[in-house]
Length: 131
Length: 131
Image (cartoon, rainbow over all chains, first blue to last red; front, side, top):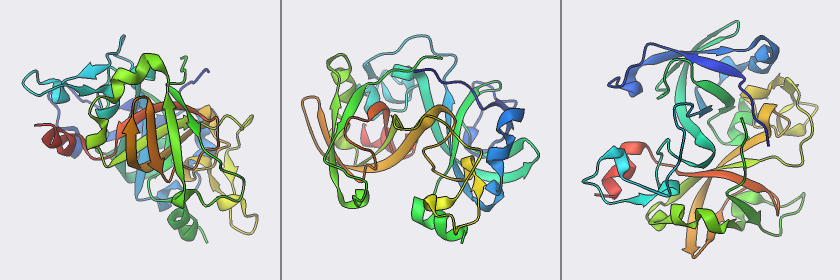
């Protein structure tokens, strides 16, 4: 199956950035801007993105890239070296203007392709918000 | 970008099933079984799957498919009619044996392709579990 970006991450993250405190922008492509309608009512979002710096995957990994920690299976980890190279992070929505979302806590580098965005709360709670 | 299944959902769900109470199996393909190592230490998992019954997407949707509810953008909803057709559900892990995970709360039909599985808790908590 083919997937393609709905937007891209814009930030100044570097290897040693503390992502949990950092604000990032997500720039949504023009053809998907309609999908943001009323997204400002969501406090938290689940962002699915592509680990575009990964070129291979492993079945077992050391948590936190720390060889001192015993290996776990890749599906018991959030390692970027995983089949399909998809990342997933729950972020806080700080602002939304035109095609730009400002979010906090997105652990992705500048230029990362964003594949999907969903409200983080369970479906029925989200429904209640929209009544 | 190409994505491909790591496994498939096995259950008896029908259109009116209450997914939140239902157990499903996820049958992992043989080549990815190593990725399940120590996954039984995870209480909750985030499962990314493909809405393989969707053939088109819309920019605005009515929450819960209910025309009485005002429209929201697709990224403010969990509608299956979304760009890239990816579903995401947090499930409870009930059991893991060989290549079969038994999970509770997966709102996906029998035969649904599973794209990725991740531990639901934040990375550093998961790390602590594995020390």
